[in-house]
Length: 229
Ligand SMILES: *Cc1c(COP(=O)(O)O)cnc(C)c1O
Image 1 (cartoon, protein in one colour):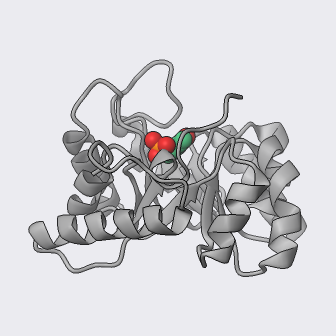
Image 2 (spheres, rainbow, N blue to C red; image 1 turned 30 degrees about the vertical axis):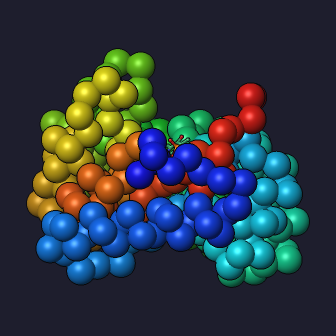
């Protein structure tokens, strides 16, 4: 749908188009399920985000702690029911800020991060929900635990650090069909009794929904092109 319906400047219209495409994809797959749309607002300025909030949207994703910190505290004060999700890599020296600001952290992928998050969750008495990022394509430059290490990592997060992992997240390789990666993520989630699957972006959210996504992370199809960094 993204190719033949380029996003308009109107968030509300774009959201309706994405929702319709999601519903059509689910219907085609014979699935009846709610899929949460995470509006990825990285690089977008406050005016565009405010328009999305006024349109009634409340679930947003950002990929940098610093950028989110400069944009969201004021908006959260004004719209207290916002759900803010960290979808980019987390450094352990940013764990305190991430725990303070985000409601969900989707990118737990190293024991060092798991430990830093556990410490901050105890210290701040604030517990963001957590997903483990899986590098389904085992790409060297990409964050995430490798698929064959995922079960052990999830177990360690739970048993050694007492973290309540609720699901998995992935970003498939850009140059491969995403379906097998989404299917692999769903399989790892099922055998670890995890119910949340964050997968699918503007180009491939329909496929992700058909393969079990509970959350799709959509930037350009909702907000239009990103601003340069
Ligand atoms: C930027 C980003 C997205 C959204 O990408 P679009 O192609 O604009 O929809 C989704 N997930 C992650 C992790 C991102 O960094």
